[in-house]
Image 1: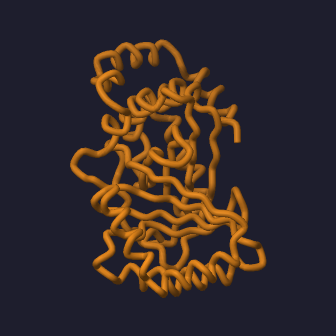
Image 2: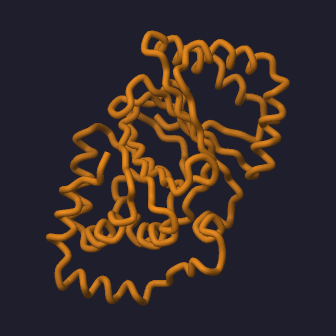
Length: 264
């Protein structure tokens, strides 16, 4: 999906003398020096060593209900074992966007060692191996990414529902991740009033220079009102103005939580 034309035109319309003043003030905001280290080190949280895995499962349409039932029956039992350094963050079906799709997000507390520990234990878990075998008959394709969380975003925490979730995915031009992070570190404050910001991540393995922003809303109308309200805040248009040119492609998914999802 191409970036919204209305967002671009709005940014141009609002980029006035006031914004020039905002731009001047932004020169005095501390920015990360991209020459000092990899962007993964500069942009991720230092106080935690969390690693996230996101999976996209494209399900055969006739099997979606069976897939959901199997997932809801097996995954919670696997995560009852405290020896697995892995926790469910969220599980969804795509409502608008790519159809007949499931999206899963996990957190590995301890980074890559925790990921490998979990993988090695699952190789010997008979219930998990049977689950994967049965599930494979229901899938058309699947893909995953390993992610780090931006230091300036909230860490995803369980939520009561009902909510809908929007996963906005941005594929950036190579070399622009630092600039993206610098702008969003200032802009995220404009999107916190309704507690809609759930989590922000960037890819480490899989397709690179990919950013995922996860938002929660009560419904589609609430989403529309919340997003429109951001445009009335001085500074939000500036963020759009500077970040739109960094994007090669963007996509929005509206998702409904599965019953087992900690994010409801």
